Image (cartoon, one colour):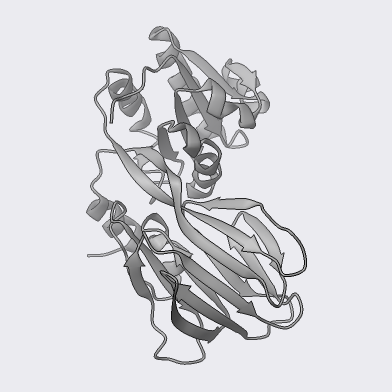
Length: 286
């Protein structure tokens, strides 16, 4: 994939963190030295001397986005700009992250390499989910970089979820919920549910039940070309739908969720840390 010409860089910063502001100021100086325009949200822009914009404008204004925060911050930005194919550099404020792979100390050097064109990107698949309601027309499309989750509602009743894969009956789960995860999301919620770690550029999705009633219901890996269809059988409005842990909707007792690989991918600037190193660091492997 041809690299973009970088003229404007957007900084998404946890402005309440002094260390994040310090790094953002350093990056702003580097970018200005290289005659680049720097844009940021209003509160951040005031503190680092960048041009103020609204977050929803990032997709139209920036050629590169730098996220100084955690994986959660990057997830929200990724869903916002994926359709534009804008590369994202994730800088973790604590250490290495699964998505924010660059440390604070490494950020200036990483920026220099990007501006010199010396970088590669990983193209991470996303999921597209649509809820079909029996009682009303519901056409909102959700995008997920990590996962789509159907979980039990506030009353805590066990769910029955009839799942079809590639338009064929797959499994009926009786469980607290079900996680449909991308390879990127395999190290998130799906991992805590016993799912496998999938190399982030593999074309696959993970289906992982949450506390299944039948112990033989194990996580499975399917091709990302399959449509996953989930029929919710639950007490009235006692199921919830979440995307990347950040967007949600209440589910009715007969709703259907259709999940496919999205048309767009997220372009993450690859760090100098191999994936195996990140896994060892985050998961405390020997």
